[in-house]
Image 1 (cartoon, rainbow, N blue to C red):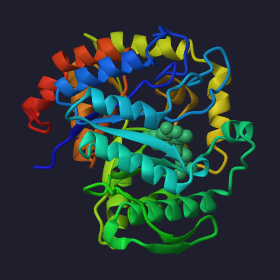
Image 2: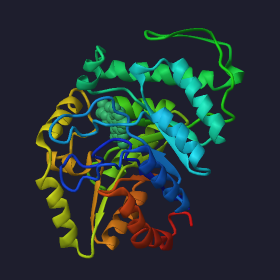
Image 3: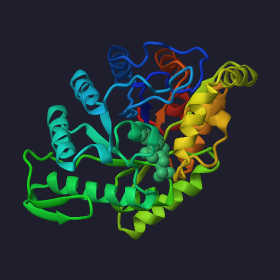
Image 4: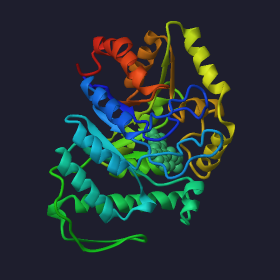
Length: 352
Ligand SMILES: Cc1cc2nc3c(=O)[nH]c(=O)nc-3n(C[C@H](O)[C@H](O)[C@H](O)COP(=O)(O)O)c2cc1C
């Protein structure tokens, strides 16, 4: 039976996951908090840790995600602190040369016994890139560059392919080689669900890390990605990042959600939306309140039974992994282990 892998979308940035001033956990972004969370997730049988990569916050009262840990150095420390769990780094293509990422990736694979993976993001925030004097390319061209970037990584991670030449509008590789190479190619994920993102993912990536406005809308997205991958004789797994909020009763959970939305940081949410809507297609069907509450994760709200049902339904609709987010990560992970994980185990979809 196809399993549902458990993971965490980690709070390596401030104010994760809600764009709200409600009940913020101030030190949640720090390395010591991240490490404690990683160790606990590993002990509970979680398989993946995914970070957020940010270079600038979104202003407003929260300056949402404004304080953040860089995700390759963060991954190096976490991979040495843990022993089984897989850790991804998220890299903005226009900010790194592929040779640098190939070398960082080979090092992370080497020091972790092959537990590292790469999430590539093509960049979308003019606010962030503008700060660095980097102009955002047109949407289609961003993904064409990302495709070239991944092809070079694959070559630099494969000794049989070396030395190799590669020429594109963005990169010129002449007799490219790198050593060491990882024992197996690290998994590459792409985050995004626009047409350009889905096509590039189907052709070159192992994971599609996606947003969905509702569990009901998920099936069509995973099917589309699966079909596109099949046309390229490939398999791509899909991961979503649900926002889990549960209480003893549905009304209590809904009240908690309403309190988060009530305290939303309108300025940061607007800044986020303003940047995202410039050419992107990944969050078109989210309302502003939904985005503010979960930072773009699909809401799963209600009792523990309701949330379990929604996770099972996401699995039925093709999700291979869920990178969970919670209002209060440390406390809610313990609650998840008591309230929801046993229900998923009983349903036979997660590993014991
Ligand atoms: C699950 C998920 C995680 C993402 N993580 C990051 C991130 O860490 N840093 C970042 O700049 N963008 C991140 N993004 C944004 C994407 O890279 C992408 O630019 C955005 O979804 C718009 O994609 P589109 O232009 O293909 O629609 C993430 C998107 C999703 C769906």
